[in-house]
Length: 165
Image (cartoon, rainbow, N blue to C red):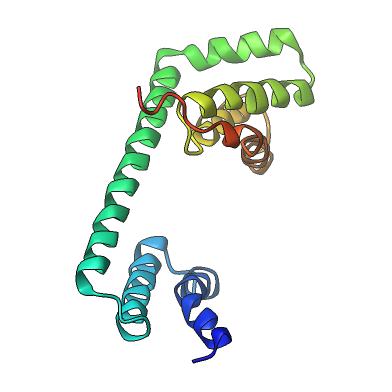
C-alpha cells in the first residue's frame, strides 16, 4: 500500500468520530467505542499488530484515562465545595472589589488563577474552575468558556508540578 492510503486508513478512527459526533450528532459514549473498534480492526488487519500489544495499549489507555479523571474529579470536588460553602460568592466580591472591568477580571481569573491551577494540577483543570467563576461574575457562558480555555494555553508548558505529590 502507498503511504497516502496508509495515512488515510490511520485517520479513519478520527474521521469516524467527527462524522458520528458532528454529522449524526451521536454522543461520545457511542461514537468513541466505534472509533476504538475501528482502530483495533485496523491495527489487526492493516498493520498486523500482535494481540497482546493491542491489549497492553488498551490497558495503558485506561490507566492514563483513570489518572486524568481522578485529577479532574478533585478539581470538580473543590469547585462544588467552594460553591456549597459560599466561598465562590466571597471570591466574586473580592474580584469585584479589585475591578469592575470585565477584562481585568478575565485576566485575573482565567490567566493568573488558571495558570496557578494548571501548574499545580495540570491536565486542563483550570477550565472547569475558572469558567464557573467567570460565569458567576456575569460573563456570558460562551465567553467564560472561551476565555478560560484560551488562557489555559499559556501555562500548559509548565506541566502539572503538583500531580506527583
